[in-house]
Image (cartoon, rainbow, N blue to C red; front, side):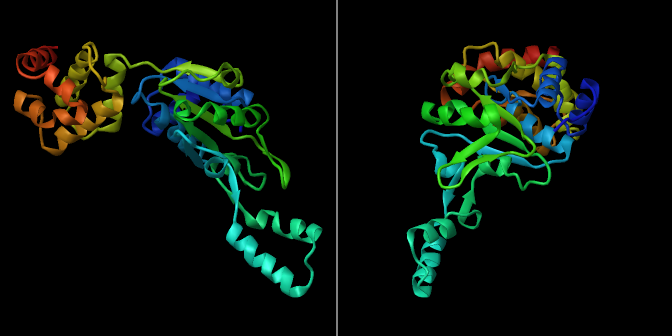
Length: 298
């Protein structure tokens, strides 16, 4: 997968997919494509890590294969498992035909026909007609043992299955790993990747994202909501709102036919952007009125 010919072309293709990437992120993605290296993205929740994978898959005209990580994730959910029910049926057929012996059973039962391919194996399947984008989302939620399993895939774009041997991608996928830093990911995994930190965007960039993703919203409303979210991020909140919350808030207010912010609109929809009771209580009353006044004036 070689991708676009230049960084500017890559940024343009992402913009056509409604993803606003700054120059640093575009450079990291461009280099990952050219070097065929995994790209490890860290940042707070809601800053656009996951949506980048979807946008680049669209820009490249290829498939997005997503593995959502969680505690307890293992090989059978992430890589492969054998279709034991079908193998059992085949075993009964071999028994009935009188052709059953250990070698025959192994040769007949452990083939691609009975292999259930999970996301990681789907991404490196040599039978693929075009390289995919593989998103390994929130790797920090998986166990450290699963990180260790990924090392072979990230270094060689291959997976070893004891019954079949080593399966290697004929054309490596673009691998994007994301982390919200709920725990530290091991250095051995990071060394196999390029690294980029995605921070909360500036006011100007976030407003550009809002205008790109929610174009039907009133311009003044978009400006006010974006400014207010930027101010909320300066507070000591339990759950700081990300860009995804900004987009949802603008979309919700636009759906209510609001053209600009006022106190009643903010109070009615505050749960779209602040998703804990403690955070809502901390910015209620006079504090919320002051934040709104500053956002409207700004």
